[in-house]
Length: 372
Image (cartoon, rainbow, N blue to C red; front, side, top):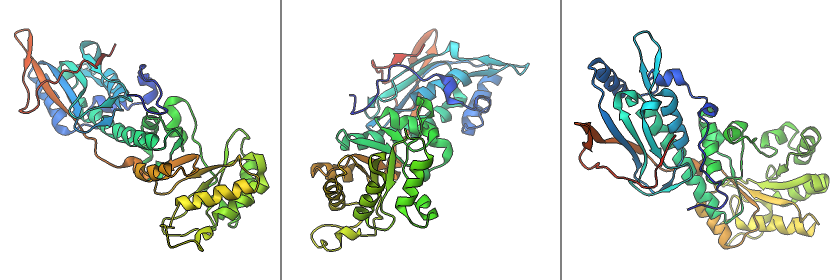
């Protein structure tokens, strides 16, 4: 089932765009040692069983990482020959898979690999890892996109994890309907660029003057970049929004409210008592929207961030709070979506027969598409 904003996904990513560390993956550098040893034993024993490996997850999820997993198999399956040349294994494998962005059910087979097990035994850690990571991000992003009810969702968690995961994570967010990402690395696989606002640090660098920092952004940045001012530096989102809008006029695309969850914005000080006033709460958004509209700045959009997750977004949407975009961070890295791979069939006397760990039988899936 497609979600709001999700792009169609019937074309696989070109493996070349992923920039995989092919030589290291072929050598088993990133693999659990027991998989490397299994491959070594099979090759030394000249034992080449044809097997069918099936991969699944135990949670309902939005699948991602499939194209990476296929790329790993395409570029890194095979064996090193005695003369140290690499014998490609991909042409000897039959791989069938779902697509990035597909919804999956618990225990549903998302990928099968059939062929000489020694050709791909060393890659299990790698392909399971990318499936687990990307599916977590894609599933969390889809939940936010759907909670936002058609409004823009910005993927802003880059600062909460290692930089090397950004590119694939950004793609997982894109597959699930995120409108924008915050770094160029996150946008690389789908040919876009990072979007962003005037940060608190730039405001501090200009002596805490939000208007001046925003004007400098407008002066030195390309006019095609949507200018979004961060307006909570002085804990006075209403007055700061009005000041920035007055100074920048039509050049200002939007304001972002990012009030700390331990603070109460100045505009709410006289209204406390009937609602939780800390952080970016509905009442703060309403105050900013009313002030902008009264000031003649109705075109200025409101972006909110800081502690947003699907539950908080749904609360805002149920009350029809006038938010134009939700920027979400660490909530997109929550949860557990581990993938497992098991051999389900082994060739005996020219026929594929069931041979598997107890409790892990063959689970055929007619949704799988053969990877050419």
